[in-house]
Image 1 (cartoon, rainbow, N blue to C red):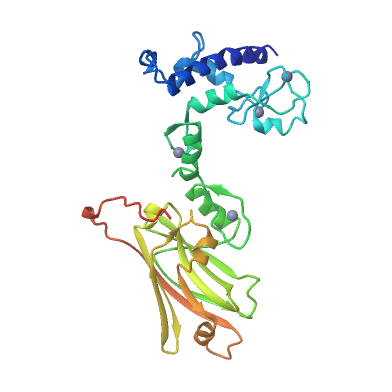
Image 2 (tube, rainbow, N blue to C red):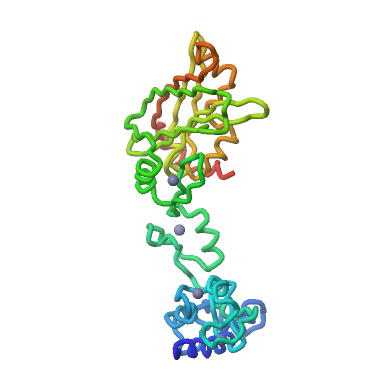
Length: 321
Ligand SMILES: [Zn+2]
Ligand SMILES: [Zn+2]
Ligand SMILES: [Zn+2]
Ligand SMILES: [Zn+2]
């Protein structure tokens, strides 16, 4: 394949260019001044513009862009790390044994390039050098959300409208419109904590979606019940809302008031932090009335929008832990 040959030739000339650049950055000798404005791109030898650098970084097998670690065979044919695991130690270009050789020069080129966030198509317009890009992508506001359904390992990800449809159609989750609710949770054998220990209801109000979780789990020796709300969106937007939950009977009442957690926080994380209405088993059975053989809880609640205080500043990053 002619294209592959060209790439390996370019790899050699670029490695020279990169070594020059390193000298410039690490030394303080007078030559420095001449190059003070040089950007990583511009060290490519004449005739290799940004376009061909990107071509150079295209994996000859899968045509995706190559990022560290970039591999090469003894003849210099490059390969991305994903493809390397698939080719059974044979160079796909020359069929020679592949070995375990990195192409550091090309890796440096890849690291020096400014690349768009991988969620560009989802609306993110940020651009970063490779490793900053990886860091950003882990927290990018445009990254897809995980399915908020608890109780099973669901690998579905997507934006909020997609996940709402997924919850309704694939998990058969109850959908409600409105910002108040009144739910009965009935369980015939409250001692069984392991199976069917959770329930999820989705509420649509204020043009947003909220997940109301109700579940039983083991806390120490005793089962407890817990209800909490998660906001289908980011942490910053979740803070615009509050909610309250109430459960009670026979003249006793438990009330919880809180801020919904973002579904960026996993269901388990929220549960384990007890950030919601926690009902001890004895109290839950007391609220259930009857013979204490059956769990019958009536949970009422409300979601409201917090008044924005213009003096408080719009974005206070205080929940980053
Ligand atoms: Zn590849
Ligand atoms: Zn080869
Ligand atoms: Zn981004
Ligand atoms: Zn799911």
